[in-house]
Length: 211
Image (tube, rainbow, N blue to C red):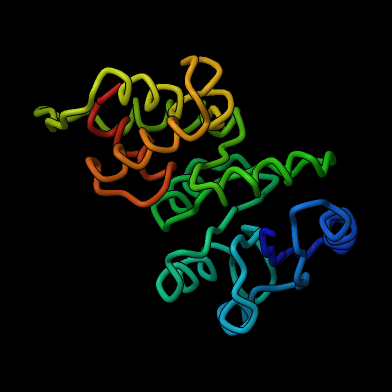
């Protein structure tokens, strides 16, 4: 069972997501909160596997709350959700350790898919966000000297698919390998890039021009 906490100030979305996740197989929905003011004490108490965190809430921003959570509980996956595609917020969320970044969607299955992906050690970047990240780093990070990282051909292939925002399952299908093999390659990529999440790997791949 994947233990999930939700921080969301939109009452309708909060209640509908809470209802849907509570009835979803494989997910243990713990509780939902309208703000992130006491996010870390709540996370410390309930020990979730995945936190769904709205990026913009009253009293305290989701990014600020996520930073505290990641500092104190680095194993907890934080999935940032927002209605905005703001470059600064995307960059800030990824660099602060977000395990994924999702554009709010009326289809609750999008959230379930994202939760399962980040809990499995992957990432979820909405396709539009993946494109924005790619464009942002292509324009902002042009280095005169390339950083050398020795990735195998298969690791390079997996990393290219990660940059496109593809899920583990999609990567497995595209490369004609198993889900577990994808996970193994991703873990090796993390070790070689010295990162802990797929968004961080995407950032370094683009910054260092590895793909």
